[in-house]
Every structure is written in structure tokens, then in C-alpha cells.
Amino acid sequence: MKMLKTNFLKALGLSVALLSTTAQAMTLDWSGGYRFEWTEVDRPSLATPTQRKAYGLNYLYLSPKVIAADGVNVISRFDVLNSSLYPNSQVGEIWGLNNTQASAATSTNQGSASVQVSQLYLNVNQEYGALIVGRAPFEFGLGMTYNAGKGAFDHWYDTRDMVAYKIVVGDWFFMPVLSRKQSGGFGQGGTISSTGFQLQYESEENKSLLGVFQENVKGAKGALNYSADQIAAYGGAGTAANSDLNIQRTNFVLGRGFDSFGFKLEAGFQTGETGVTTAAGKDISVNGYGIVAELYVPRAESKWDWKLKFGMATGDDPASTEFGGYALHRNYDAGMLLFNHRLGQRDFLNTDIFKDTTNLNVGNSADDESISNAVFIAPSVGYTWNDRLDVRNTVVYGQMLNAVKNSVDSSKDLGLEWDIELIYKPSERIQWVNQIGLLFPGAAWKNGSDGLGNDFTYGFASKAAISF
Image 1 (cartoon, rainbow, N blue to C red):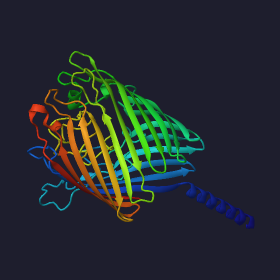
Image 2: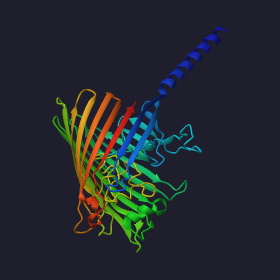
Image 3: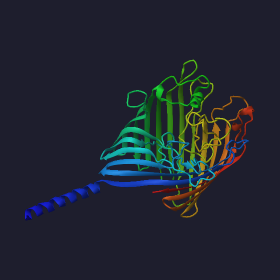
Image 4: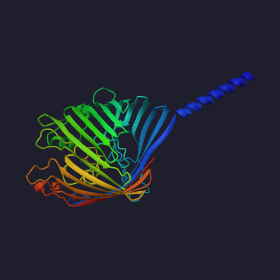
């Protein structure tokens, strides 16, 4: 009997030890963010009617990480009150939208919304590398082409179903990437897939950055799913998606930091076939590029800091048989209004290919515009008022590369914008930003002898973000 009790106590002790080890190995870590914004733009049409915008956005994301073992993590992300007008984004839902009651005037609540899952992937970290499998975020360089939307007020993000392995040697790493953007089902075919690699050198000690990302994207014609407006934007009347997609993209990034200043430069290039054909059956190809540079002077012991953004992205030449437009990522902004909100009465920036023009327009859309068909420069200066309050002034100037109307009276001047920001940070994880943007549009918005509107407009935004 004594021996039985002894063996029972040993077994009980072993079970408790095993359970304790399991409990320690399997843990759950949470992160996330909450954001509220109010935005008003007085005259986005730059004409009459003004098509004035005034809307609020409410959004929360939660990112649980299951730590299954040392270096083995399963990471996911849930989006709460995601946008119904911009699916697969982090714009957030509009205040008062989609009241599903029989009578909005007498309803007592706003109804409910579904929780969306935007990420789920396995991350296995090893001594000399890391494995990523699943639907994961992806970013490269300055985020001008590939942007994971990590900023507190970023409305867009890049994710992809991928398998990648990051091989690390000192300050260098090499990462081959296989991903699939679209699949027709369990069977083979009907897919859009990409193969690529990233080679990068990054040193925190000397603040240096050097990298390249190259990928080839191929898609079957039945999987492209272009809208009618997108097909027309590529080639006009008579075009159709009758061919396969085959595009090559290459991005380079270079950066260097010093005690008194630093700079970063990224360039992106794309060539290939869109899958869209002309009425004569000829494939419409793409051939465009974009370049951006950022210079900065940190505060150090001063209350002032200085930044400068400048760059360009090619536009489409109507006289060419190929599409030459290159749009920077929607998260990559130069100013509050220009290149950020839709403006004017034409697609002056050649971006209708990338945005919804069927359900949304210049007066009923969020900040879904991109830098394209333009060259821009945006210097800014910041002043630290105190430990919690910063003030920043930014001036943005833009000029079109290719005028929409090719005539002698057409101008390429997009105008000048002055943005004023008041940034309040009561703590490291909380910030409240108030912005005023004043836009003095140039003559390019008139579209030559068409005499379209280019009236002065302004915008206001008040937004708060909490990260945890």
C-alpha cells in the first residue's frame, strides 16, 4: 500500500510537471490598435457642384500570437468594423453607414457587423533564418510599392498567401518567396501566382540599408477579374481581357544615416503584359517606373526637425500603344489632399485602373488616390512645442508628366498645398492629430480649353490612434 501511494505521488508529480511545461510553452500574446478619424474636404471636385465630403471612420484590429514553442509562432489578425465599401483594407467603417433597421428614423441601434480575418500565418524562427507560411503581411523599402500598413493611420495593407524562407548571414539576408494571389479552387489552373526573392543588407550600427526585391507575376486570363472600367482605362473602347497576365517587377532601396542627417531612396520598375487586348487583338503591355527619395535632419538637441520627400511616377502617354502608368502605394502620401484624395473632374493621374470608379466617385470616396503621372516635392519642418505637443508644416508641389488633353493650351501644373499638423501625444501609445490642408490648384485641372474647375479647396482632419 505504501509503495502504491509512493508511485501515485510520483505519477501525480510528473503529470503536474508536464502540464506546467506545456502551459509555459503554449502562451498567447496580443497586440492591436484602435483608430477614430473625422475628415472633411470642402471642394474635391474643384468646381461646382463642390461634392463636399464629411465622414467619420471607426476601426479596431486585434492580432493574437500563439507561441507554440520556442521560436514557433502562429500569428493572426482580426479586423473589427471593417469597411464595407473598401473590402480587404483597414479604412474602417463610416459612422452611421448601413443602418439595417426597417426605418432608420425610428431605429434604436446601428445593427452589427462581421469580424474579418485578414492574416493567419506560421512563423518559425531559427538561428540563421526564419520560415513564413500562410497569409502574411509584406513590405519592402520605403513602402512605395509594397506596404504592410504598419502606420497608426495607414488605411491600406499588403498581404499575400505565401511560403518564404529568410536566410540570415550577418547583416545580410536572402529570402525567396512563392505566393498565390488568386486560385480557381482545388484544381490546377485559373490562378495568379508570383515567384520572387529579396536580397538585403541592413546595419543598425552604421545606419545603412541596401536591398532589391524582384518578382514575376503570372495569371491565367480567367482569373484576372478586371472590372469593365479597368479594362477601358487600359486601352479605351474595344479592349477586353482575352490574354494571360505576365508582369515583372523590380524594386531597389538604398539608405544611409549619419548623426546630422540621413537619406533613403527607392526605385521601382515594371514591365510585361496586362492580359488586356485591343480591338485588333494586340496585347496591351505595361512599362512604367517610380522613384522616391527622403532626406531628414533629426532633432538631436534642437526642437526642430526637417524632412524632404520628392519623387516621380510615370503616367500613360495616350500616343503610345503600351500603358506607361506606375502608381505608388496608397499608403505612401506626400500631403493631406494632393495625391491622397480624388480631386478634379478627370482621371488626371491615370489611377482609374487601381480604384473603384463604378460605385465611388470624387465626392464619395476615402483617401484612395495614388501618386502617379506626376513629379512632386514635399518639404516639411517640425517643432517640438513641449514633451507632448508637436507642430508640423508641410508644403507640397506637384506637376503632371503627361497632360490628359494633348494640346498647346494644356498645363501640367497641379498646384501647391500647405498642410498644418498639431500632434498631441499624452503617452507613447496614444496620439491625437489635427490637420488643416490648403490647396491652391494649378491650371492642369482645367484640362486646357475644356475650362474645367480648379477652384481653391481645403480639408480638415481630426484623428486619434491607440496602439497596444
